[in-house]
Image 1 (cartoon, rainbow, N blue to C red):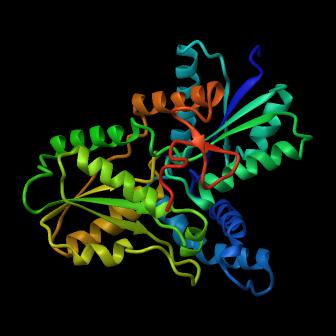
Image 2 (cartoon, one colour; image 1 turned 90 degrees about the vertical axis):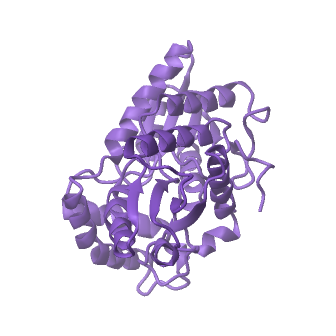
Image 3 (cartoon, rainbow, N blue to C red; image 1 turned 45 degrees about the vertical axis):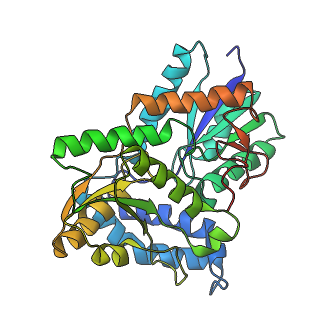
Length: 346
């Protein structure tokens, strides 16, 4: 490998199958990683994580069965392959490997691969366009720790949030326009409402990172590009822990709407997964229809060629000139680079 450079594509991970023990282990790792959300953990953090995982796993396993297994990992692998091909098309012979926070291949697996391949520079690129504490920041921190644990064998160039890339809002605009046309929905018609649904986050994570500010800016940019359509923003919160989450949550917002139809946009996601195929297509759809609303949901543009081009832009910028036009020093993760550094501070 002549360049001695590799990209580690970072993602969350989600079980494809319906094995409850696998789901329990997946959940346990998530709860343990976020143990600091609770001031006290009866019996210790590991025991509390196992308790929460055991309580949640049966229902989540049934959700995976209902949607036929999560497509998140196959779609992540497709992005890995597509990004590598797009880089090659630009005469950049750079391998791309995948590392997930809570599944296999893990971030540790990806770093070990880089070490075995004698990589000297790693571009850590997250698949979370909107920077979050438990996703973007946590995955990049883990990548750096894993490299340091192996005698710091490589330089890490970390790329954090990239929702402010000039092409990202346009990717969603195209997806929304194409879906609305195919579904026969006029977004500007009275009674139509664009409904952005974002991944929720505990309020505690907003103390150090303006996640909601980023989400709101992205939604505003997309809505304006569509012709100043009417829109609202709700959050997909989870009640696994007795802690406050960001508002408004979808369960409260949807019944309050004055509309005839909603066109739901899963703004936080670039892969389909249980949070789109179940929480939106089943739970939120049922809630909307119970209120007499027509429900439409824009598919995630996970296979967009423009999205792969955007991600390749980020890799090129990370290798050539971080701190220049596209990437700037990250507000939320010191030492990392992002597209909104210095611009969207709360």
